[in-house]
Image 1: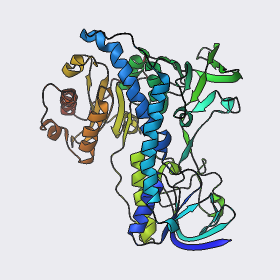
Image 2: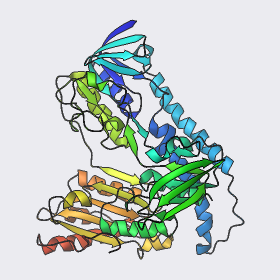
Image 3: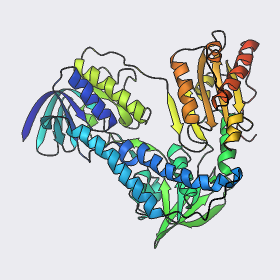
Image 4: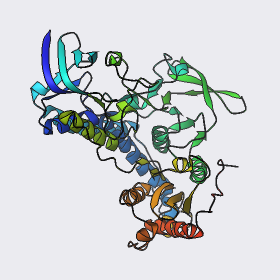
Length: 479
């Protein structure tokens, strides 16, 4: 058996793993990366980049649908599903190629292929032919889509988001299970490309929203376009030829059976920590098998082991994975000198239309411990000038600030060009700006951001009322 001694071993070559390798190497540590699967990040291969390619095609199709509202009448719309998916795969492979170039740019002696498993706190067995003794170890093994038990072993009609981007053609019909970011993005895109889509949600959530007013507007807005069924659970599924017979149960207990070409499971992802032999490390593990770790340092307990990216199940986002990896790699490289790293303002975006975004402290977090003690401002985009000009006048933005200091805390929204608005507001949170300071910033006319100013003015008025304020919207959507 080949034996190797190193300062740092990084398990995984996704976004977090590559970032960790570079950071540890920059500290002067002898570092290796270990990969048991294909090179290429989740984002590039089956995540954010190919999904945006599909959404871009859907946006092009949708513009033809809304063009008559401007007095523009295009000819008959024809969607070539094979051409759509060929471009998605071609451009996806191009993005993956860039990632492969990055990994292959690491020295060959620093790259080990095979599945790693702990045999002791400092020792990793790679398949059955290599043993790596590492002074420090970074776990960056990513995540895998969750498949509900009642949908397992049904047949080829049950798919996850990882499978969608290998399709040769658009399907005729898809049932999407889950109304989170992935389910909504793919569901809306496929629907706009002519696929019959139904989205089933066990609860009443939409993406990552927690503000009841924004959630209510999001549910109403998305339902105008999508067959979105809340409070509905999957009972069973049966593969029947080229279709799946899906049976669901609504909140009243009524069961419905429908046929779809595919059932797309979008109920979240689970960390890839099983099979790593973490029981050999002596680390304290959570119920989901993830080691207890410090989110400021990525250190597991007080050990020499660090965990980064989707593997730690904190925030499964590329930007977070990159930051996690850098923090973990730096600390592994200079261990035992472990330091807190830069944690940026939380920012999450769903690329639906309108965009759904949360940033800073969300409504749920601010409400913890009792009734709200923070100021709220809002704006509806239904009559916002630039939004109406573009026929995109749907959505709501709610912004939050701290009484006394007037410091801006965060926001939730479903808004046209919310991906841009959310960045501006996230920067304001990270810069610790106050609401008056934000209102002193320039606002051009006519732009979507004038809606932000309207919400901030409303927020400033609420701040002026004082800390006796209580939130009148502290109820569930629809009540």
